[in-house]
Image (cartoon, rainbow, N blue to C red; front, top):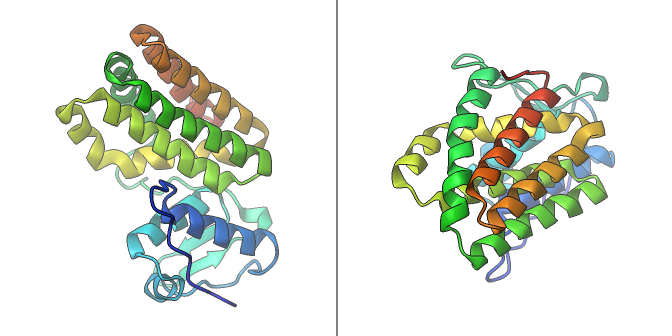
Length: 234
């Protein structure tokens, strides 16, 4: 297997290295370069071969695991998942349920959207639109991993634009779980377009400065994501 290093992002390019890693591995798996049951090199070894940091590699591997493309066997390693077994697990079951995370997101991210609507500027709106466009492009070419990464960046921006250090501090420790809860519903390929529609609605309300509308749109999105994974929120 040719694990050539990834090229460095161009100056000013906000596309994260983790996206490039995920796209490279996803292509190898889906195009047959990596077969079901193949064991990937250790994270340390693979990071060195690709010339990337281990945190970037971990984020990419988490995206691929959520998409059901790889399975992690504790004490053994990471393996390419057989197509018939590609069902994304909830990786934080020892800490909380997925429902717990969706309920927390309703409160935190819904209010973050309300605050962001009154505090973000035109440059912020453009950054949100970039991520929505990235999601649309990824959906069009069937690149679910890239779509998941753009989704995560969108939500990070909404919290950033809320401009509340306490809220940001509350979200920070649970970011991994929040990102995972965003990715899991994407296993429903037949409903991926719903995710894009919902993000467009949130971005539209934020762009218009509609605080109440932004909060409702974000809550609707989170409820929709939960429903796509089989979790019904009250």
